[in-house]
Length: 214
Image (cartoon, rainbow, N blue to C red; front, side, top):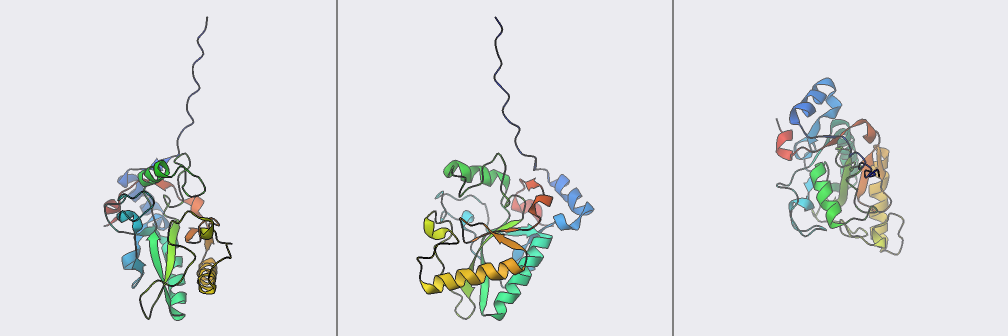
């Protein structure tokens, strides 16, 4: 009697976890460089939630508060920031490049594909091509009214939700309008999440922030 073997599990995604391989990619194509946003966009507000316990897992995910994006994505984000500055606002960054290992941890904490990318495909954050953002008032330095807090898993976080104060709807519309002009596409279930057009050109990465600095 023949014993049937269990089918092999589907292969996981290809993930670049070797810093040498990443640097060779950058040498071949400078667009692949992950740029440190704190230095690249002066005055940008950082509120990297996964470097604190104030996130959906209740645990610290990142060893430091840092934000990186691929060079063309960072350039477009800088253009969006400049446009918002002229209107009296600035961007607040909640998350940008996310190592693949962190995506696995987040999915373990919240195995819901509406709000967390499954490790079987990885996240556009892992590619350095997605960013989570809010808005601040430049005069006060304070957050403006928006639909929800970052990572709120409720219907109010959806980009078409309308049962909100007028100021929250107005600020959400401004944020979406300006980022769309600079190559970003909103994820409809999260008003704060934006993917950059062309994300599919970049591989998934699992490199720590410290490895990305010169």
